[in-house]
Amino acid sequence: MSAAFGLNETEIEYRLGIIQELVAKPITSKDNDPGMVAENLWVGSKHHAAQVDKLVELGITAVLNCASSGVSTVPLDKYRQHGIRYGFTNVKRDDSTYPILHDEDGVRSPHLDDAKGFYEEVVKEGGKALFF
Image (cartoon, rainbow, N blue to C red; front, side):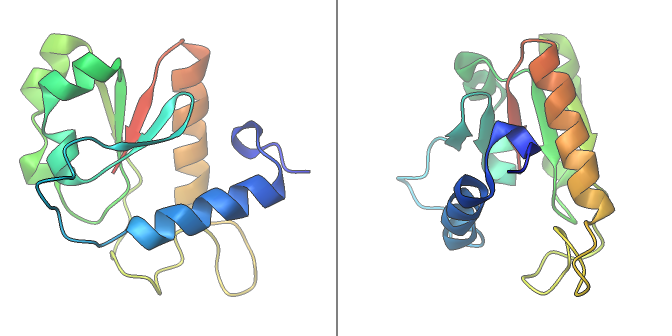
């Protein structure tokens, strides 16, 4: 049993499958809110990350940029005004072959370690995170 995010391997694989189905789909008028994938974890797009009022409404206290871009659309000043913490994983590419979770030898990616550490700190502080 994995301790990652408090979920077992089966649950992680199931949720990862859901996320993979949603990644890189076009934003539509029906995609107004990020998706909640755990009690304190939301997944969305750079468009969701830019909607500070929505983040505040959802109680999100931290935003992690897991993409290779999107920084220019992140309203860092508004985050500061609302006490929203910002972090990033510093990935180099944003495509399905990039080893964001682990490399071909199964070694866990430092990006995953960064995301896990960020999430754990947010939860320890009693907050909620948006990953985009």
